[in-house]
Length: 97
Image (cartoon, rainbow, N blue to C red; front, side):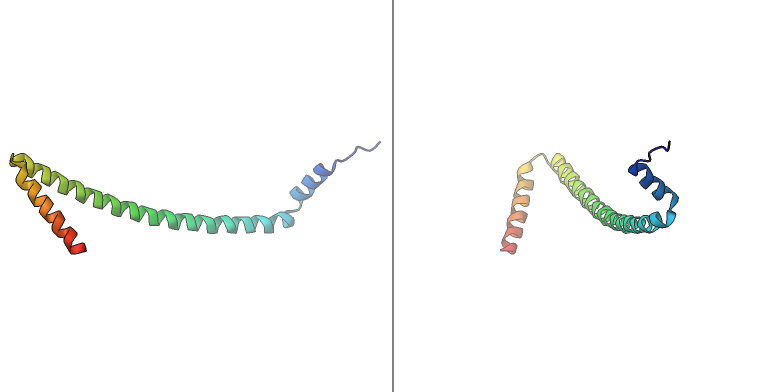
Protein backbone atom coordinates (compact mmCIF):
# COMPACT_ATOMS: atom_id res chain seq x y z
CA UNK A 1 0.00 0.00 0.00
CA UNK A 2 1.09 3.53 -0.74
CA UNK A 3 1.15 6.22 1.89
CA UNK A 4 -1.18 9.11 1.44
CA UNK A 5 0.51 12.42 0.91
CA UNK A 6 -1.37 15.36 2.28
CA UNK A 7 -1.59 18.49 0.12
CA UNK A 8 -0.01 20.77 2.74
CA UNK A 9 3.05 18.53 2.87
CA UNK A 10 3.33 18.55 -0.90
CA UNK A 11 3.11 22.33 -1.00
CA UNK A 12 5.86 22.66 1.58
CA UNK A 13 8.08 20.29 -0.35
CA UNK A 14 7.56 22.25 -3.54
CA UNK A 15 8.41 25.50 -1.83
CA UNK A 16 11.49 24.14 -0.14
CA UNK A 17 12.89 22.38 -3.17
CA UNK A 18 12.15 25.06 -5.71
CA UNK A 19 14.28 28.13 -4.92
CA UNK A 20 13.29 29.79 -8.20
CA UNK A 21 9.75 30.15 -6.89
CA UNK A 22 10.89 31.58 -3.55
CA UNK A 23 13.69 33.84 -4.78
CA UNK A 24 11.69 36.53 -6.61
CA UNK A 25 9.22 36.96 -3.77
CA UNK A 26 12.03 37.06 -1.20
CA UNK A 27 13.94 39.61 -3.26
CA UNK A 28 10.80 41.71 -3.58
CA UNK A 29 10.18 41.52 0.15
CA UNK A 30 13.83 42.31 0.86
CA UNK A 31 13.69 45.36 -1.41
CA UNK A 32 10.49 46.51 0.22
CA UNK A 33 12.00 46.14 3.69
CA UNK A 34 15.17 47.94 2.59
CA UNK A 35 13.18 50.95 1.34
CA UNK A 36 11.09 50.98 4.51
CA UNK A 37 14.28 50.86 6.59
CA UNK A 38 15.69 53.81 4.64
CA UNK A 39 12.56 55.85 5.37
CA UNK A 40 12.76 54.96 9.05
CA UNK A 41 16.43 55.97 9.24
CA UNK A 42 15.70 59.26 7.48
CA UNK A 43 12.82 60.03 9.86
CA UNK A 44 15.01 59.03 12.81
CA UNK A 45 17.72 61.46 11.71
CA UNK A 46 15.14 64.26 11.30
CA UNK A 47 13.76 63.61 14.78
CA UNK A 48 17.27 63.45 16.25
CA UNK A 49 18.08 66.89 14.82
CA UNK A 50 14.80 68.28 16.12
CA UNK A 51 15.48 66.84 19.57
CA UNK A 52 18.95 68.38 19.55
CA UNK A 53 17.54 71.81 18.70
CA UNK A 54 14.90 71.51 21.42
CA UNK A 55 17.57 70.48 23.91
CA UNK A 56 19.69 73.51 23.01
CA UNK A 57 16.68 75.80 23.39
CA UNK A 58 15.88 74.20 26.73
CA UNK A 59 19.45 74.72 27.94
CA UNK A 60 19.34 78.39 26.91
CA UNK A 61 16.04 78.95 28.70
CA UNK A 62 17.34 77.20 31.80
CA UNK A 63 20.45 79.39 31.76
CA UNK A 64 18.33 82.55 31.44
CA UNK A 65 16.09 81.41 34.29
CA UNK A 66 19.08 80.73 36.53
CA UNK A 67 20.46 84.19 35.73
CA UNK A 68 17.16 85.84 36.65
CA UNK A 69 16.92 83.83 39.85
CA UNK A 70 20.46 84.72 40.86
CA UNK A 71 19.70 88.41 40.26
CA UNK A 72 16.61 88.22 42.47
CA UNK A 73 18.68 86.55 45.22
CA UNK A 74 21.24 89.35 45.07
CA UNK A 75 18.52 92.00 45.11
CA UNK A 76 16.08 91.12 47.92
CA UNK A 77 13.69 93.85 46.74
CA UNK A 78 12.05 91.74 44.00
CA UNK A 79 9.51 94.42 43.07
CA UNK A 80 12.02 96.20 40.81
CA UNK A 81 12.68 93.01 38.87
CA UNK A 82 8.96 92.33 38.58
CA UNK A 83 8.40 95.81 37.14
CA UNK A 84 11.18 95.26 34.62
CA UNK A 85 9.72 91.92 33.61
CA UNK A 86 6.22 93.36 33.28
CA UNK A 87 7.37 96.37 31.28
CA UNK A 88 9.43 94.23 28.93
CA UNK A 89 6.57 91.78 28.43
CA UNK A 90 4.03 94.56 27.90
CA UNK A 91 6.38 96.30 25.48
CA UNK A 92 6.86 93.10 23.56
CA UNK A 93 3.10 92.53 23.63
CA UNK A 94 2.49 95.99 22.18
CA UNK A 95 4.96 95.45 19.37
CA UNK A 96 3.20 92.24 18.34
CA UNK A 97 -0.20 93.96 17.92
